[in-house]
Length: 222
Image 1: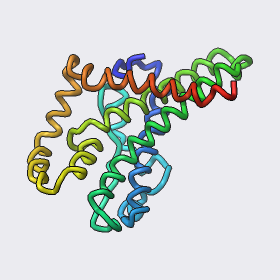
Image 2 (image 1 turned 120 degrees about the vertical axis):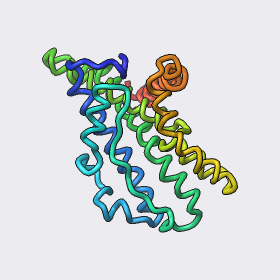
Image 3 (image 1 turned 90 degrees about the vertical axis):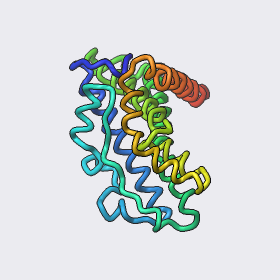
């Protein structure tokens, strides 16, 4: 199943998967920031699992048709954090990808359980097809977002984690690097050979890892 191959038939299933993945990713950022003392996201209505405040319609349409897209970034003010503000930014940035990883495992568990327990045996072929594709894309998309968002390129979460774990003396370097971040990201996305090495291979490894974790979780129950 190729995440970057567009076809109309799979749009509804990918749409469901992306909305869930984007919504809970952004909610995780908002929740951790709020727990650390910053109510900026909460005050702007982003501390919610309602997808409407989190989804950028244009970004969602783009990712359904092509290899990239986005949700609305959660506003965060680290000056409001209690304790170590740089470490707080690491926690906030890491929360989104971590939730996508957990979701990937969650949907893999459901997918495997539904198949192995024979829960769809009395269901019509159309519903079986829809449920299987939705769950499959939920595993793939959440795994992909986990890998993609951890790339150390601005403005992704991986860059924020790297920046705020680095010594303060490196801030000027990171500040200058942010100017080129979006262009570097576009090159990584649109050059197929580079995309395969930087993104495709790690994504395949994570999907396999997610499936192995799901199998381990289900083994005592099946």
